[in-house]
View 1 (cartoon, rainbow, N blue to C red):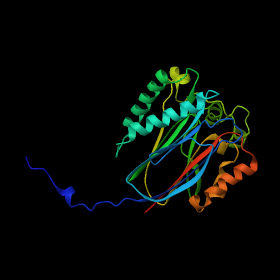
View 2 (cartoon, helix red, strand yellow):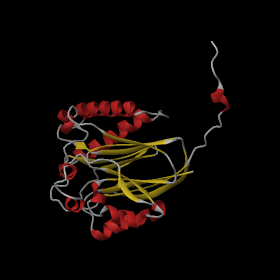
View 3 (cartoon, helix red, strand yellow):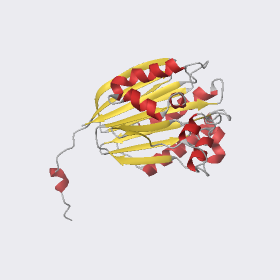
View 4 (cartoon, rainbow, N blue to C red):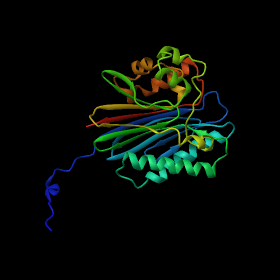
Length: 267
């Protein structure tokens, strides 16, 4: 049977240029329960602040986890989820929402047999693949998109305060100072095992139209700085201004483990 070969004559799309900046600090905590997955490597350090520039790839996965459970349970949960995510995507060069959701369900099952019963972690991630961006999250670690128009929160907290926001009971300013804003009702790990039939992973996908800037962060960032403050610090050059974000949080006073990743996508 004749098979069309027109695709052979299409110009090959060049890889876009990617720049990354990532930072984490233990803050006032006795141990580091945050964990970063950046460009094929996992970081769980007391302090790190560095960038990777001029990356040329057609597939990139970055993610941030914020562990919970006390003592070492939280750091083990965040590292375990990051490690499993890295392993399951190590050879992947193209993915779909279905594959991503199934992968996260697989990881959740693994946590239930490998981690302490009271442990859990948030997860927020971003996948870049040629012409599209896919973001996903469970818990309250966040993903923002920044552009000339402003800052947009494109993940969705699974939290008590987010429910109040969604129903219009409180506004953004009230949410920022709410005493219960760190109470989450969904995440990854054994502590959330009974909830995976009741909640869904938040997924958001958009076409890649550079220049694009994304910020992934644990709540150690957005608990200290309001969204508009983050925007004013980072723009118009988020990679260049990223150290200023960490310095501003330090000046206000760290409240928690504090971690973030900035992804810049250029032509």
